[in-house]
Length: 207
Image (cartoon, one colour):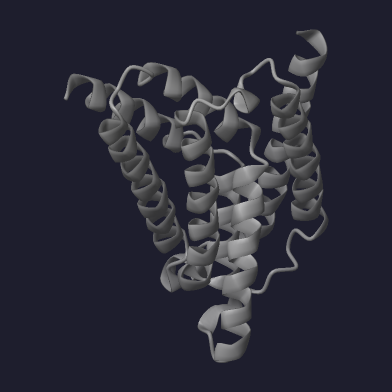
């Protein structure tokens, strides 16, 4: 039980630190509403689940010094630079008035698009790969049953936390109150994502 509390606390504290996934959920919720943003939430949770399964299985491909791990980090940096530039370029172009969901077919399409973006964001997030590899070392001696429990717990917590963030930010009343701040949120989010990518690239060059 003590080990579980340590793992659960470390995992939840990592969720509290804003990263690419958080900004994607926040922007999706503010621009399209929390229901559509749940697609991105599920995609992010599935990506986390893939990293959890891979790291807990002990595959050497995700060791920090492996070539594949470095390739994943570089691909993640490229994605962060791309999505960050999009956030900045299209800042202010999202219409909060369009989030009343008066056209169900477009909402359905947007949900699936959000699912894809969430999956890509989670897979190409350098922080996710590094974090779960580090976390797996804490439970290396745990039984298979406990590892399955840890994995299911973390997947559920990631999904529940992201949905909670989406519901809080995507609330119609809150969106109306913060409609003027959306362009700045997009610009700041884009700048942070670009800064994260550059920080990882610099770290890889200087290691």
